[in-house]
Length: 325
Ligand code: AMP
Ligand code: MN
Ligand code: MN
Image (cartoon, rainbow, N blue to C red; front, side, top):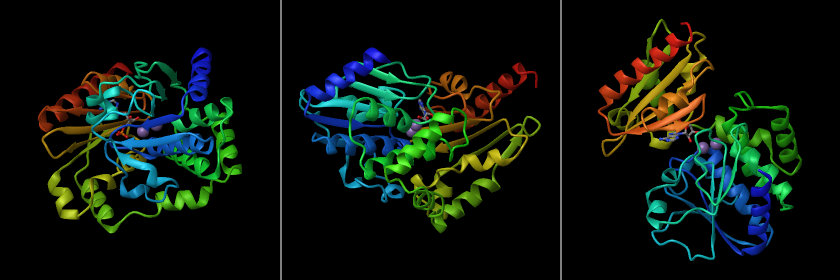
């Protein structure tokens, strides 16, 4: 990382204007990393824009600096504006509008195993449990300020991507970063409440439907469900209100792999996969053109959902068998 870190420092010194982008269907780490870095650069006197293909989803209205998030504009920024991608495994996942800009990001800061290093400067660490952790260290290493609003955003990224400090890659250093962010003004109780105790009744109703159609296969080592547009319509929940549904399947002790297929408007199917540890779901996702991490990965596919479901069950079965099960 060292030469890249030097280049990053030089870029910060040279440029006055920055634009920060993260992945489509943004999560806590995508917004937290974007806004954390944006507020740090802003406090350093830089001019910063934060773009997202999806704009700001409602669950994240509590984030400080939220008003900075804009939908990615159709026209690319002028060349003097440095483009920074955070928490995003491939350029395509920065969104169609960004792809239309036809610009290579100047900096790619990420923690996905499958990241192909698409930036001019690449700060990618697959051992980091959240992009926000990389950013915390980077902000310190580059001598940038970290005001309370930036610390709060980075804490949101760290908390959500580690599943509240449970998932693999949560290390002693992760707790050091958390402590550093709390000492700079992040409030762990308030953030956890905003995040984990604020779902709508509609979202609860959708979760109930999802649990009712969950299937256990492969002697209960695989659990999965299909989420349809009708289920959304019946429950009244929004598409951004399904976060953490899949994790509900992982509470069953026998489940090695949990996955879900969501039939999206427009005919594509979105798949999320989670593994307890033995199966590398990043590999499975990659064989369908997706990607992610060993324990959490995703796919977007145009295959009919029935076929995708059957092929995923087969692949996962093979992966389990190869691990002696
Ligand atoms: P999700 O299931 O959407 O929470 O995604 C799990 C992980 O896989 C996240 O780190 C995503 O960035 C990554 N991921 C999800 N979908 C895709 C995809 N279609 N291509 C590459 N990576 C993905
Ligand atoms: Mn993310
Ligand atoms: Mn992340």
